Length: 102
Image (cartoon, rainbow, N blue to C red):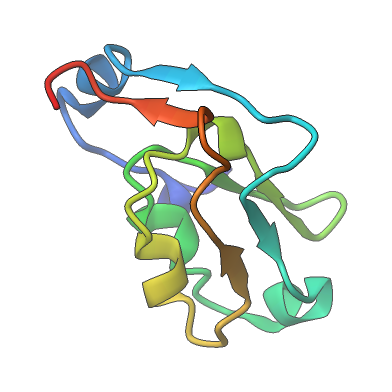
């Protein structure tokens, strides 16, 4: 994977490791609306902007992989997508990220 798509936040990985997640595998809260839109996107701003590295570009399949179980529910991906192609909603009650300090 290119360094262009990597997050380089010192200490962030350690802080994210303190979070607890309750994964709702049957009802993911993140998705792309159209695969072809992601293929045509040159910059793919969702990848470097996500603090939890939820998004990765699969060069072989030419598709965006979403590890929704890593999501910290900040909504940045939805904001930075220039095509509005990220379907983002809060997880169902009882699922999602659990913050240790609030």
